[in-house]
Image (tube, rainbow, N blue to C red; front, side, top):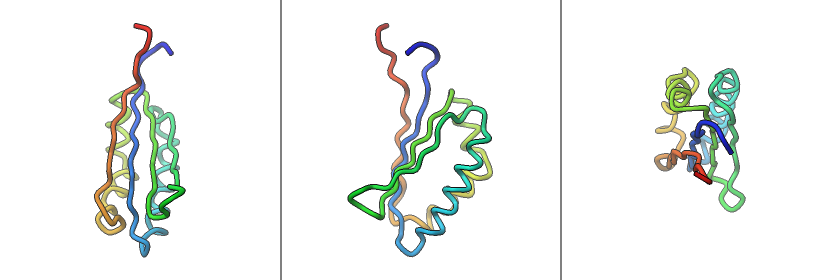
Length: 103
């Protein structure tokens, strides 16, 4: 795979049962807003098949500037602001860089 390395985030969220619907609505608003960001390439939300309180969010970005632009968006800021009320534990965030092979 040639070209510039892509950047991704994998975010694990442990949701409070009583705030799940609220968080899912905020996540959907963030997804919709992210589709309008030119540097956001992918946004996917996954359910953990073994633990209904765990969600995994996967986002990929064109470059560091796209990550910063996304993190400064109104939707992302609103989502992060709701974490204290909606999550049972702090989010676990993994920032991933595409591994360059064959070089």
